[in-house]
Length: 139
Figure (cartoon, helix red, strand yellow):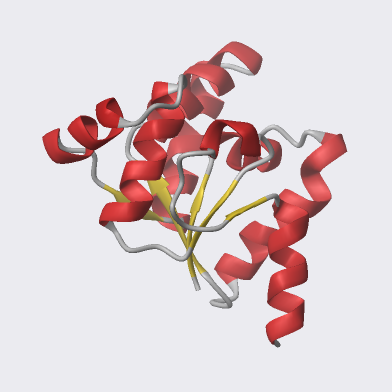
């Protein structure tokens, strides 16, 4: 299974957000174990750096980017993806970019804690808990 991770799922792990760490961490581990292949949109990296730098410091932000570069496959964001995102009706351009990335890369789903931003997705959108249930069902 090839899935795209929304920024919030990655930040749950990087910032050890206790409320969501268990389920988001389990998704990350499934990727590390090869049970699934996890992707990040290239634009997600700027968000990760900015949020981690604000929450922690610049060195931890750089380390977080490095960790993600090593852990995930990157969906490039080019003009075609930006135009596809612009054409979507959703009001969150960042989410529209991720939907366009998932479509262009023929991914099997998107994992997010905020499904309402992904109403225009033509592929399944899961919360971390829902994807873990799906993986368990198919094992």
